[in-house]
Length: 249
Ligand SMILES: Nc1ncnc2c1ncn2[C@@H]1O[C@H](COP(=O)(O)OP(=O)(O)OP(=O)(O)O)[C@@H](O)[C@H]1O
Image 1 (cartoon, helix red, strand yellow):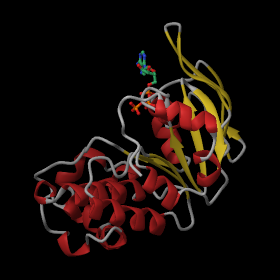
Image 2: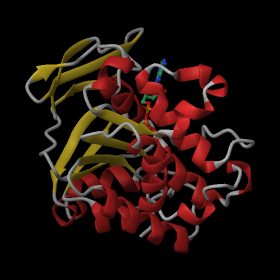
Image 3: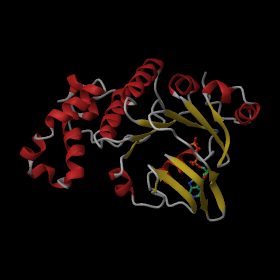
């Protein structure tokens, strides 16, 4: 996947400015940058939640810029959200069955077709196993610890069988143990697919990313391996200028 001069203006304010992002197939690519750098806006452009003002998003050579989110999902792009989007009363298995049923058009009629949903049980259990939640399949999502909820969200994204998986701050709000578990999980689910993730935690970025793109004020400030960008003077200055102090080492 790559972008060509991708730009998004919000009423005269340029949040993403002529960004050329090149994500090689099968790699894990991190997007980092100080608050307000444009990372979330870029994610929203890649998934069709926002329409670019100009520029291209090339997925296997096809320009998908401005396509509807559903169409982009069909083309193999899935996103796991930063904000939890789970139903507390539904079990883990039900979440997965519903996610697997949706692309087939069963969608919201799921409660009338338990039998049809059952057809997705095996795949649901495989996906739960992939994220380490198989033994909790019958539990309600509301009973999960925070880190487990995030893992369930990753399983839901995987249900779409994406070739490009976008993870929005997969370790946000996690304690050290969950962070390390999530690093292992992302490595595991990256097999056979391309992953782009946003994270403020530099330990996570250093552990996972093959390449790192640093954004600042909507523009690409630096691009390279983790070691290359962390030693880049412009990057150091950009982060030192940040008051949030969110760059944990
Ligand atoms: N809908 C919108 N209308 C106007 N301005 C917006 C809109 N969405 C984002 N922006 C602005 O665009 C800039 C980039 O925001 P964005 O959320 O993409 O940054 P970010 O890098 O994801 O930041 P953070 O790390 O804080 O999540 C910010 O200055 C933000 O205020």
